[in-house]
Structure formats: structure tokens, C-alpha cells
Amino acid sequence: MKNLATRRIPLLAPPKSLLLRHAHVATVKTLLLVLAAASVHAQTPVAASSAPAPSAPAATVPDIFGLTKPNWLTVASVTVKEGYDTNLFGVSTNLAGHPDIANVSSSFTTVSANLTFDLLAGSGAQNDGFFKTLTLAYAADYTAYTAAAREDNLRNTVTLALKGKSGPWTLSIENPFLYVYGSKEDQFFGTYNNLGYGVVRERRNQIQERNTSSLRYDAPDWFVRAVGNATYYNLLINEHDPVGTYKGYANWVNRDDINAGVDLGYKLTPDFAFVAGWRIGQQTQARLYYSLVDNDNTYNRALFGFEGKLLPWLQLQTVAGPDFRRYSDGSHSGITGDRHTWFYTQSQLTATFTSSDTLTASNKVWHFVSSAGLYSIQETLDGLTYKHDFSEKLSASVGVNIVGHRYDFPAIRNDWTRSYPIDVTYAFNRSFSVSLDYNNTGGHSHFPTTITPGQNFSESLVSLSVKASF
Image (cartoon, rainbow, N blue to C red; front, side, top):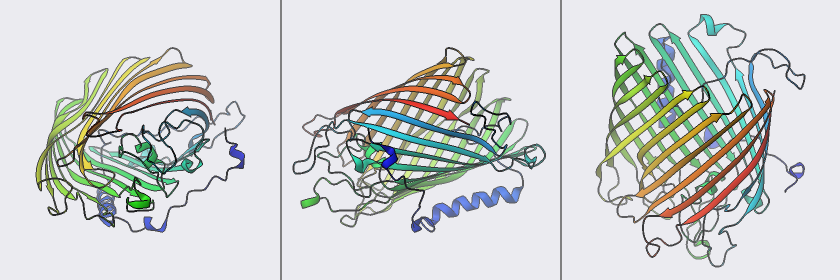
């Protein structure tokens, strides 16, 4: 194991390019904020938000360490994780003339810190004012690898969450911002399989930002909701033409997806509604300096579905519908044809069978720009997790996650991974817990290896972590 005491852990240091990058994304988000503020009434939580609701302020009593958090600090924790990865780069083939990366095993150490600040604490605004939640959270995760020091990285995540409610109006805005302080040079891969070594891309120097906002008005039998979503990737790595000396070098491009629209809901019961909506959006990408290929497009998306409590113990949120796409650059497009109609779907189901048993299932199918920037892809994400609490202290979960990338014509690729995560956690008390995690991942191509050689790989990852909460 590496001695982390000898490592200098860098601080959050976003580059200057953050200030004025992708103005169209920032403009739409600003308009949403202005709309929310001007109404002084607001919006509903996003149906498929990936982040949990902010924790309520903790009681001001000392923990086992003798410390008492102020009421404006709702979360404060430190976690140390020791683990072992059997395939650090997620590939099964090496490229001649470069260091071996196939099936490279490595132990690793991750040190994490989490803080959440309640910006309304002490003001009493949660009880009297329109804003019920206004939190700012910071999470830092520094990982050091024994076998490959260049893969060391620090992930900095800052999340702003706002929720408000007054009468029939509900507001929700959530904006996680991630800056990864990592290597600006990528690896040399014998076969281009971004499903296998997508985890390598995630360790590179980069920025990711996601915004989910909504404004909802409720009537007794119906509701109307304005929504906006933005996803932004900015890969801050060095770009090289992958020929000659740099043959096999993986370049990643900047990509974004932004959309806005309206949902109309008819309440079949007070807690369950039929929903119809429309989205107008666009996707753009950066161009590689040695290639004119792009997959810029605009789209209109019709959505139909249901949301709410189908049964007292069953929560369902599901939408699906046609995605009408128009690709902008026919002469240099990474897809054949400039007009396409795709199928879009996104859903989540949560079944709370008992206070100790929860089953969660999720699905998303959509089209996006490939991370290499050369093609258009259909991405499929499926997840299933079952969690059981054996007691107040002992809990465990098991699941399966399926990821698929089907490349649009003329590309010939259809890559999939299947992962099986297992977690066992024991909480000695509210301040101290231990977790054991295992995840096995297998990747394969639906095409013969003669067409897409080297796409198959396997990886196992095991870790033990200790968490102290204050």
C-alpha cells in the first residue's frame, strides 16, 4: 500500500475556463432560477432525481467523540477505504510498444470527507418562509493506486440544493458540480472499448455538471410542471492525433445535453397521476483537431407515463415516448442520415415491502454523443438493487447493473457490461460504521471477435471501508 502521508493531496482548483464555458447551458439554468425567484412560489422535486433529499438538522448532542455539531452543519464524516482491483484499466489486450495495461491488478486507498451546510439554519425560514431547504454540500474523494501512480486522482463534488413550497407551488433545484484533479494524459489502448475503460476516463482531469430544475403548480385534480435539465462534460486532457507515436491514444471530447419543457398531470388518485410532457433540447460536442466529425443535434421529445404512489408501499415514476432528432452536419456527421426517430424511456420503481426490505429498479434508454466524439450511440442503463436490514446495526444489499452502448450506423459496435455489486454494512453506533463491498463486472460485445476484437473483459473489485460521522 502507498503511504498516503507522503502524498500531497491537491485542493479544489477549477481552471479559468469554468467561468464562461458553454454559455447556452448557463443561460438556460439562469432563466430557470430567475423564473423561480420571480414567482416567489415554486417547484416540485424532479421525478427521477439521483441525489437523496438533504438530511434534517442533527440533534445538538455530543457524539461518541465528544463533539457537538452546530445546527448549520448537518453532515460531517470521514471515510477510509482499502481495496483491490483486478483490472484497473478494464481491458484484455495490450498495444505493442507501450506499457502493458491488460488485466493490471492494483491495491488502492481512498480517503473521503463529506460536509453538508444548512444555509437556512438558525433563520427559521423552513417553518415560516417559502424556502424549505437550501443546502451546500462538499465531498472530496482522494484515491491512490499502488500499481499506477498516474491514475491517482482527487474528486471534488459541490452540490447546491434548493426546495421551496407555498400553497399550490413547489420548487426544486439541484446542481451537482464535479471537478476531478487527475492526469491530463490518457493511456494507450489496443482496442477502443469505452465501456471497459470508461472508469479510466472518469479518473482524468475534467469537469462534470448536472442541473435538474422544476416548477410545479398543483390543483385538486391536475398539475402543471415546468422542467429543465442540463448535463455537461468537459474533459481537460491533452489531445493527440492517434497515429504514429500516439497510435492507440484515447481522446475524449467535451459533450453536453440540455433540454426544457412542460409536463401536464392528471391525478388518478391523490398520490398517483398520469403525465404527458414535451421537451425541446440540443446536444453538442467538441471537434477533435484532426477530425471534422461531429454529432451535434436538436430534438423534440414527447413523453407519456405515470408517477407517484401506485400502492402505499410501491412508488413508480416512468415516462416513455418518441425522440425526434435532427443532426446538423450531414457531410461530417458520425451517423448516416440527418433525421431520426428514436425511442426514449426513463423509469424508477421503489418497493418497500417492509421497514427492513426495499427493492429498487431503474431503467433509461436514450441517444447521446459517444465519449470519443466520433459516433452517435444508444445508451441503455438498467439497475436492480435489493436491500435488507437484519437489525438496527447490520444491513446488506445486492444488485445487478447492465450498461449497453449500441452504435448507430455506420459504426459496427454493440458493447455491454453486467455488474453484480454486493455490500454489507455494520454500524456500531451513529458515529462509526464498517462496510465490505464486492463488485464483479464482465464486458462483452454482441458482435464476433473477428469484427470487434478485444471487447471482452472481466474485473473484480473488493474493498473494506471505515466511516466516522461527527
